[in-house]
Length: 256
Image (cartoon, rainbow, N blue to C red):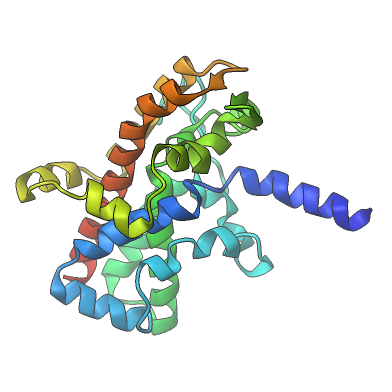
């Protein structure tokens, strides 16, 4: 019984930090990998010991639940309550996704990290840029990023946060991460540069704009069906692509 209670507590805590699900993070990382400069790709290959960006795309979700990396649990999201903005919402004293991404980029650009520190920072950045583009990771603190807003995913009880992690993306397209990249990473160079513009702070504000619209369109008890999936499939595609292209831009600036 004690083990079951501990497992239930772990799952409840885990709900608040998981984003996109494994597939979404793989897609974001693979799009980034496909848009690296040759120089950046070569350097990153060495930093990651021959592994790809995709290999570490989901690493931090698991690591955050270990004692060694428990300090990163709040780094996956940035809560903004209804009626608040990024400027007015009190920030989490334990850190958030914007603070983490900004700090990691600065540290990686500094050239002052040990090899071990650099590898760790890069693994974290790969994941957190994806989190930054998951709409419900800018959700309300009052309902734990949508975790406490119940909805029905077809006939299954769920919550607003969870359906945007995995259920809606998977209902939209049953593609592998390489197929996702092939289908949505099709912008011309000029269009890609426009998507990559701005800084992490701008990207969080942009993501929250999408989050607000999702809240308005999805009251408690919403029955999510094919029409809902059709409405948000293009938004999910857009956010995967934005996250991947922007991660590539940051990595090209660091290593290019």
